Image 1 (cartoon, one colour):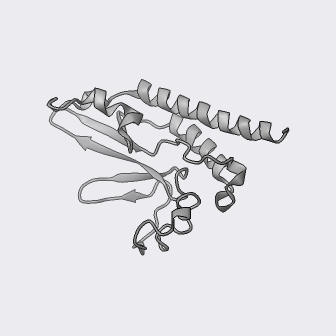
Image 2: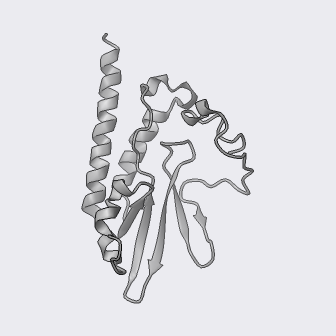
Image 3: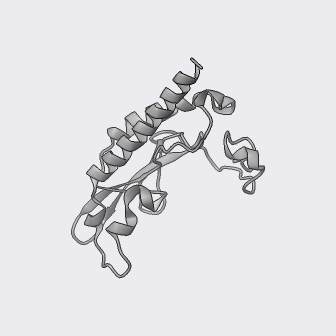
Length: 165
């Protein structure tokens, strides 16, 4: 944050991608932030960047309360082998950690940064009314996570096989 992304293990190659930021405080795994009357729990899921997080929080409507997850899904954003990412030597271990940790999360509703990751456009069409139940989809979360796990295993296997070439 303090250098505008220059030292990011992947995006730093593009130079400064945002104005440098001085943090008021640094959050850690399971820290709680309370914006207004909301209680936001940070989950350190450092795959896209060393500071990436997912978030858990509760919301309520007239009918019930929902535990929501904004998931930093561990999709692989590099073309290189994990072992070639010298600026983030623990990257493969963190992918393994996040893939395992996410399986144990408890939530009602989940969203992700990319609409395609949680099928937003099929769950809520233009003109649809309010329907939070459309986003209650543990099976979709588990399927997305399983696919990302397969992608991770494939990347590890490609790296392992390249040792024999």
